[in-house]
Length: 502
Image (tube, rainbow, N blue to C red; front, top):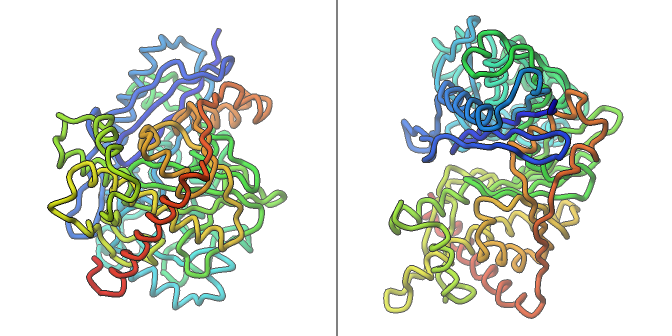
């Protein structure tokens, strides 16, 4: 009988499921729904919301698809892992009904609330204890609900992150994780527990916060009701959960100090692991509990996030032809322009406020357009160069914190499918890039195997992880890419100084 593991990845664009064969370490079935990207509602400028029940509907669809595709038989599925978009807020009543749409990661409405809490708690508490300012994270979003929707707040039984919600739908239990609490800025790193001081400052009842379980652990079992809705077998354990960036790092076996992972989906990230609680004094990059953290052996993840990444590329695709043009064709078009796009600069910050910009609403800008010189190849290349330059901007912050950025791992997916993007990333940041055949859903499945005891060790869990390609920077081309970056940074600073940001 096969030993199978199911990974579910709740993104903001789609929900993906993957079935992993524990013996080979290979995915035998995977699927993402919907076929087009999920919608994000913006009732007001700077807001971003999604319906948690929509995630659940697509999760059921993906689960049913992979179970049928792999002809899963009774007793074969040994564990379920869940990865999810970080920082979202889900509020439910005592009957587990959703009280309002989820305020998701790229929503900007709570920036002022986070700044007020930072002043009230003080820098001397926030930075060493929270390793971040409260910023625009889950705690601040929850405070916004309390202040602006008191009728909804009065009905709250528990608050959750997106992955906690899907786990609740499967198991009937409301739990979270230590890494989840840290991503919501509820975690006190010095006390290694909930920040009672932050909860008091924001007037958040402690009993709204679910109990925390380790990322790798038995966290409930599939109920009879969930089994009928999904096709899963009742009693299968949920044995892993983590936010998308800690999970992406885990999926690439980034678990030791000095190792780094990157993604370039809707948002772009770099996530580095360390064993000391590093923090940026300006909270432009953020530190969270990593999936393998324990009080005895601490492990932290430093996250650089740029909201305006793949979403800029998808916007450009719509402008250039939508379904009539493929990303591969766009990449080919952009490759026809020279390095630096002949002076055309794209500032990609058009998807909410950016942490690396200290939560300033910079916005997206196309600068230096010459109607006699530039055409669509320059626009495509400048967009990809602008996305990489924004990550480079964050790289420099991480280096100033003392992180060693030499080799970065990524799944060959999303924008890393573009040869132009990959080359620009490697050259502009002067790093080696290792590309692997994996994704967040596969990572969640491997995590489920560890949590359920299917794998005897982490090395066994990653036995099927395949390195596809390694790219190294070519010193001959370094200077043109450096020139392109510094030109981009100069234009960014001009925008910041001019007051036209936003």
